[in-house]
Image (cartoon, helix red, strand yellow):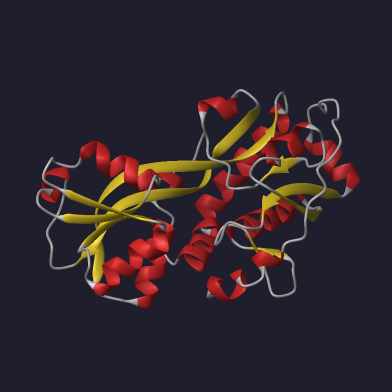
Length: 267
């Protein structure tokens, strides 16, 4: 599946209601969701390939497929509620959604507000470039021109480890850095696995990943105290990891197998 075609619709996302201030909702249980017959799941629709709108204006992408699979596992209908980066946690805490499958990175700060499942998705940042170059660690960047998107995670990571004689070229965004790589302006860039999948589609067999820089895990979020629901979600993730369903979703949307740091189950 080519998610770039599907991504054409994400810019048409409807404006969301800001929502009035609401008292924190109570912890959620699996029984309540099953009794209702519907699970309300918050999801970004402007973060391809994890969350987009399809050509019919419906939520789609990696997160949508995970949300649908979770609802199927529960035996209920799914109601995907579009959220934004800033309002996704407030939507959960106020009870407007039961849980979030919204590309929410697991951080200590967020864990003070919500409870996270084991990782179901993630982003890996790599040094990536011309196949003819043998670069296996930071020392290999010595004397090299390396492109990055300015102020990005990869910019920070490469700046921290690069030798003093590495030439870090900063571009306005990922697209410009990628164009510099494709045109030969730079032989190496810092890039996420999502961007790498795009490059591999556009220019197969020209480039490869040299070494990893960072990983960011994304978890399904529930309200604090929803221990039973969290246990269920973790069990669901164990099942779809062991059964291969999550790997199939990853291959479909990111054109690569589920990486080892995501494939591990949690007992």
